[in-house]
Length: 187
Image (tube, rainbow, N blue to C red):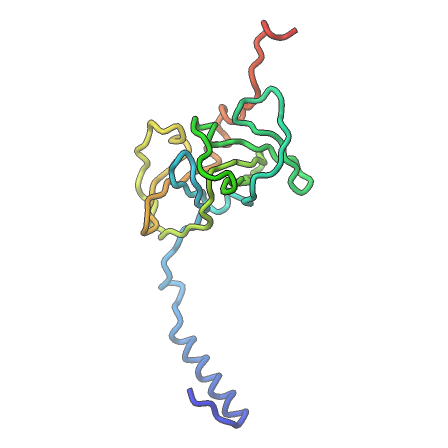
């Protein structure tokens, strides 16, 4: 585009170029529907949780131990004035956190019935998939986390398991985080 020295000619050229760009731009019908989620590592597997299920990702905070809770309950952290229970979700599923501790992250989840931090080995960030990526059913029924997976998919580079956090947080085993004290040990 040759730029003229006269201001009105320059404005006309910009307007014409803008109108041409509008005519050539992609319409909403041309865009494929994408699905986005938060990618993370759990028990050595690549997982992705739907965007609305994770409200924040933070480094592992300092927390205070809570007595008489199951081993996978790490403690309570104060996050901007709110008490956040921190759960070692890898331990909950019978595994151990992997890799460098500096890479461990907490996925904060919040719904009407729970506010919790799920400690995982690694977070890969925002992952994008085509709308038809997650059509395959999950066949790993022997995996400890199988009850939280609704499908498998591929982002064009590798396979991912779609993890539904509400399936975890509504599970009776997860909600029952306290140790059962037998009547023989109570004094």
